[in-house]
Length: 204
Image (cartoon, rainbow, N blue to C red; front, side):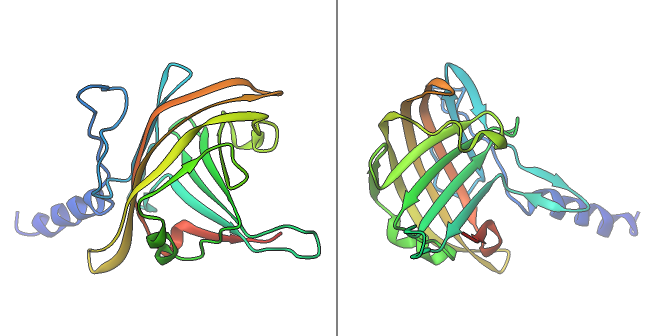
């Protein structure tokens, strides 16, 4: 029995280290409640259907939070500004993305300045998109869009002796795409721990 205790402790650590949790909203149980704890969850109601991210935890790879940030440095020769894409990846591999122009996020610390910022989606600064598959990224760009992204809470935190940034907020938008038709994303919430390995610097 004594030999099994360390093994049981290791199993418990592996399955709790990523601290993923789903807390349903009592008023809208198809979406997660809004939290600011870094529970590694995003959810929304898309075209009337429940949508939620899914974190995959296993013994081999640990925990993979279904959120990433892709940063693109400016290419002056091609007249392309800095840009950043924040992506939430659903359990069915569909993706909700927020595409920021003239903003470059290369570390979790860069997110701290965004706390309390509300963005009007469909502006020249940021658009929101929904892709049913990763291969629709260019096809489903909105022709017209209304909506908001509110980055409500961004704070640093130490978790398991590792520094992270809690990144949480709410969103909702409607848009029309020539290729993908009408898309309605309502009651969106997100709450993630962001580490350096959630951020990818992409070439132009």
